[in-house]
Length: 193
Image 1 (spheres, helix red, strand yellow):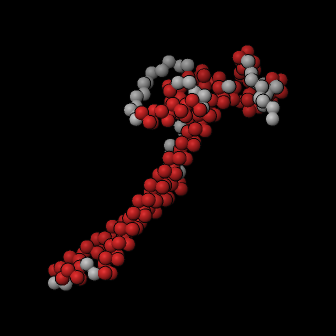
Image 2: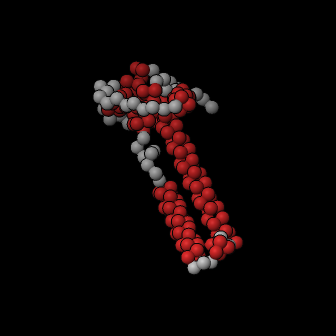
Image 3: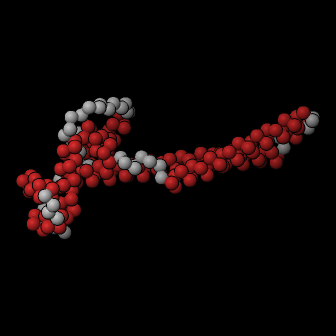
């Protein structure tokens, strides 16, 4: 597998200038001995560089744990990004749609919400029947019979399973977001080349 040609700064400037004049991507790629994708990245990187060199007017501050900062620094380093500020800037630029929950997650959360409502109704009915048994003198045995004990255990198991499902859902979504954010960082790092 051959290694991709690295463009010089002069070649990059020439590609940007000629692309702005309307020269086609395929023509530029053939002339400079690179892929059309490399030409598009060069033009895109220049546009982003111009935008990024604008005077910053808003400061961002966030508190994180030492472990979170170390993980962020490792991700930046792996993506070839030299500063935290540049990494945050690139994440902000590429965040469109990354942090928006998808329809599948929304549907699963709706299903879980319905299930938890059913659990709440079931617990309320059991409590109501236990209270009625106490009022009518059913005694301790009636309010906590084997059947009711089994129902309470089943409800508890259901709630725990629902909590595990929610936890798994959130972990999967977080992992997917991390993969998407890493891909955005990688794309920006490769575009800068």
